[in-house]
Amino acid sequence: MSWNEPGGDKKDPWSGRGGQKGPPDLDEAIRSLQEKLSGFFGGGNEGGDRSSGIPPLKSLGFLILGAVVIWGLSGFYIVNEGTHGVETRFGKYVATTQSGLNWHFPAPIEQVEVVDVKQQRYIEVGYRSGGSEQVVGSVPKEALMLTKDENIVDVRLAVQYQVKDAKDFVFNVVNPAATLKQVTESAQRGVVGSSNMDFVLTEGRSEVVAQIKKEIQYVMDSYKSGIHITSVNLQDAQPPEQVQNAFEDAIKAREDEQRSINEAEAYSNDVVPRARGAAARKMQEAEGYKERVIAQAEGESSRFSKLLAEYTKAPDVTRKRLYIESMESVLGETNTVMVDVKGSNNMLYLPLDKMIQHQPPIQETNIPPPSATGQPYQTGVEPPAQSVGRTSSRGRDARGR
Image (cartoon, rainbow, N blue to C red; front, side, top):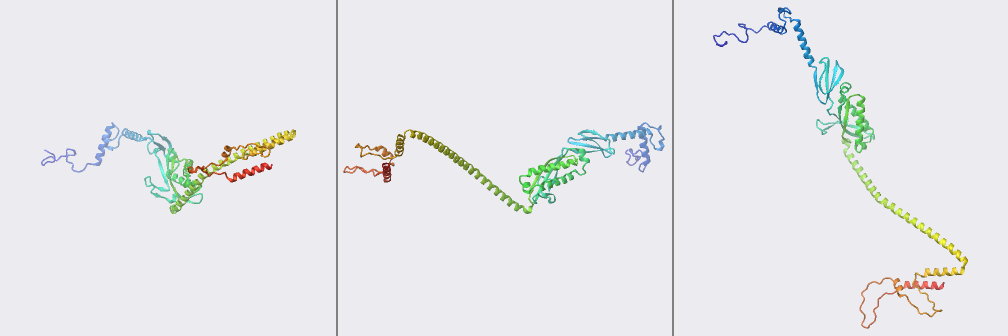
């Protein structure tokens, strides 16, 4: 019969309290636990008074020893790959642990702060990306700055850095990210303030970034911050939004100016070499003419000196030979025929072939057929009257001589 069925003995088989109706007594439960622990550690009734509720000294020692062992085991910790552990004892630096299983005195004696030294951290100056890589908002307080030529530019930087010394990163700077941001703003304003606006916006962007990175690293090293600057990216550099249109017009004008300069240089490169070549050719021709005239003059002078010596020896013969040579050189290129009609009765021979050679070429014309009367046709070619007159005048000059 079940204990809770009608007519049963109403005894709870799990409680073992028999006819006890109320909840268990707390003192009795504590006393029962002490007895069990005392029996487990071998105390029994020998180590103390069982009725007093105080455990024996041997049992208390085992309890303390177990607590110490558990506390000591809690000092083991694991440093993951790419991280370093910085151990401190009562707040003072003790050591830097590498990746792997390590042990230190558990709290509150020593503590460990794990620092990720491989993580690529970054800060944004002059803008906020909102967690994405695209620029979504500008911060004028950080972005606007003055240049050397008293112009205002909007510069936005992204600085990436890593931890190179975990100890310095933890102890020497209270807030490394905030400190790095302030140092970046200071270095950025210093470099931009020493450069002209055109240099910052156009060809000097890479040089400005390199100089800013150098300044940031120098200051952070002087602070012993344990930070290494890996890269400085110039996200944007432009004039303020209020003067964008005017600046674009200025850029177009500058481009037009540069295009005109390039065209002028191309024209100059084409014309100047040709002019220099022509000038060099003229100079060479002049030098050749000079040498020729000098050589000819020297030859004539030498000839005249030799001729003078011969003339002094035989004046009549030399004078006659000179006259004949002069007439030969003058009349040798003419069509004039000299005839001595007084002292000679010779037959004249006209060199028709030589005369035809000196006549101008005959133009082609349609030659009509011979007439019925048998008269020869006329060619219509007559020697020019000017040539005849010139020949006659030369003949008269020759006879006059």
